[in-house]
Image (cartoon, rainbow, N blue to C red):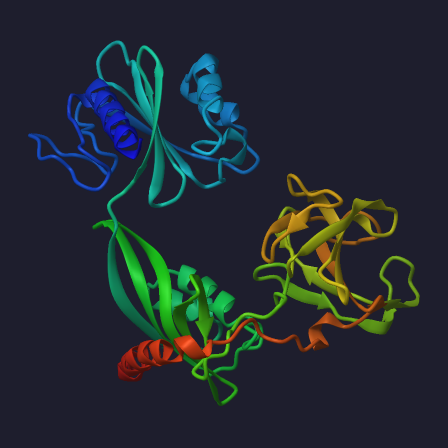
Length: 406
């Protein structure tokens, strides 16, 4: 059955590429030499006109493609394919559609390529029948190193070195519990070993971080990437997981605008009241993530809280997310959610003077200050993996030590 599937897929791809350009790509990783240049999608576009469409925010598929004279029936056909291959409702803002049409007087639409991400794509061939093929661009992985001394922020330090700020995002996620990236000090520094994923000479992106050290408040914080029981995670130099049972914050790169207080001056009621949560200032529509695994026990609207969600994590802990603009798709009472999953979007519903998220946290039924909780780390390196981990750690520790800090 597997051989039959591979044969059928190869045949379908050949038909598609012949229809588009008369050139054939044998598979998605090896290109058959032909007279003209082959693009990243396996066919020559020498005789084709290409229009690039960037998907805007909150834009349905029809709104994206209709301005380019793509027939509505064609769009309906695209939306009807297997949702695991292409889900028209989950087209990502900022992603691209490439529209290939003939350069002759007919201007016939040949095919459309949708880039799911920098590597994965879907080709729609509009011949007698719609043919849909998934593919991956050929990616070269090169190990890189980077370092820097913090003057203002991690983003600024990387930008000044012409290094992708995606590296800052990845570092902040790895060290989320060890380092408060809103309180970096001038003179803090970092060293990192990571993969650069190169698609072609003009297109690359930050891949996996393999190891890093962040010097913060006169202390070194280490991270080593290791596979334990087929679970890929980051560990410190002692083999302790850097992950905690809960995320540090439910939003990425927001700022705390109001802290947990038994007596805070309320901006609406103009009197002192308890504020038993943490306010994170963020723009409307910013994704809100579940801070831990759990089950949704409330997803509704209440006058003061606005649109809110409450999650039971276990018999001890519960979390609440207030003033949401809307819920994420599928979020309802009884739904199981995973740590980091998008559950809703920032808003200012209920009693709110500006766009923000109010995070509430309960321990044994009592509201507590989430920022002062000390949660245990996830599973450390097991004894049976200790030797393998030490080998990996020693390899990358030597590499880190060789990196100079500018």
